[in-house]
Image (cartoon, rainbow, N blue to C red):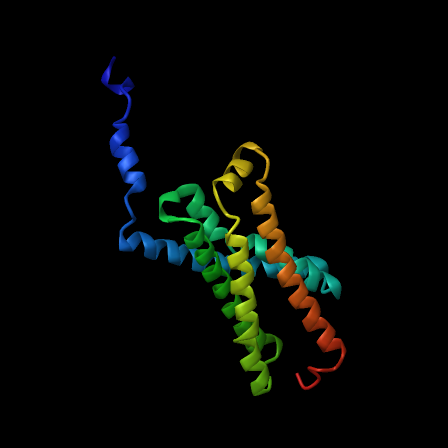
Length: 193
């Protein structure tokens, strides 16, 4: 067999796949997750612009768009550098980091652009409860990010039920939160904002 047709050294490849990444690999994964959360902000703005600010769509449609887009860095890791994802919990934690990144950027936008003269309680609120919500919903979604999702995206294999259920749970939590906040706004609880 000519040299160019000989099989690759499979044991060396298998060892490389199971060997833990270097600390720089973990840092790269973390940075990619953070960037994915920032990318989610773009998706949210596009969604809001497309709805024309309609009352229900930002509160019920935004969770779908945001929860699908926030873990984009984790999707990239899964597709290009799966070795950096050390298990389902690690994947979910990186998705939570993406959600936290998204939440921090969203909070900054709210307190500087949307409500620039906000009372102190509103600033405290924006930097606590929604951040926890975004991280939690993204963590739940991250529990469903796995090879089955990649197979579905690449080859049209059936979407794993667990993946679908985790996405629906994260989106449902986010939608319930947004709906509750909207009900409180309509009830006048947040009148001084």
